[in-house]
Image (cartoon, rainbow, N blue to C red; front, side, top):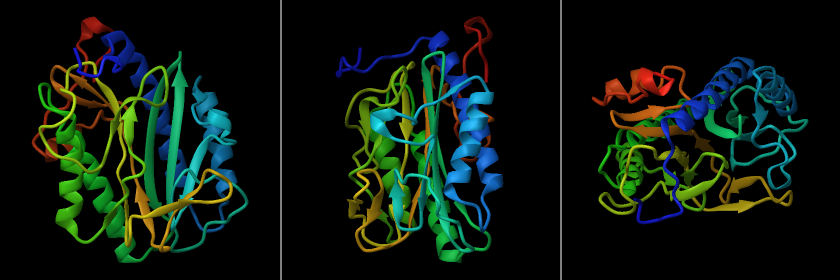
Length: 279
């Protein structure tokens, strides 16, 4: 049992439902990635996302959550997270982070991507790459018997090794299941060997947010949009992961995380056939 008794370990059947939600999110984000282009408004991306989620037999996680008015978050340039879609038109050279969630039969999937709009500055491309690399290093650190701090330390270590990027500390990953946010919190800074023990059935969202400058942030007057204090650009990526007996299974990656985890020498997890789902 987890030291934190609020953490709910999921059954194979529950993880299978979360995989369905995760696939809806993964496919929606692929549609949105292809749609990002100069001249497209963030509201148009939001409408496309909601249409795709609902056509997939799912419900947007974000719409109405604590009063949030849209189906995705569209954070551009110095916006770190939670930016509300609207009339803003994307322009060549922008960097946009798109956060998306979907619910299938009461179970959530949650993921985010950072995408360049047209041709972007190599420094921004590298920012997005480092953020994604850190995410996958964090996922690779999810091993049965380990500690949650192993994940945080792996994310932080990868970012620190790549340069002087800011790591946002005020917004963190989280447990996920029948609610979008559940215990435990998953910081992007931490020490290995600390925190709750990692056990099969754990489902979490890992989501590093890094900046080109200071990691300090503020919230705009809309009470949602988080921006960097110094105006530096930011990147945000996220996946929902289930820890299985065989290792981490990335529920919001189309291949379950096989390709990226294999590159890090880690076997992708999954459920056996008797549980009703597989990789």
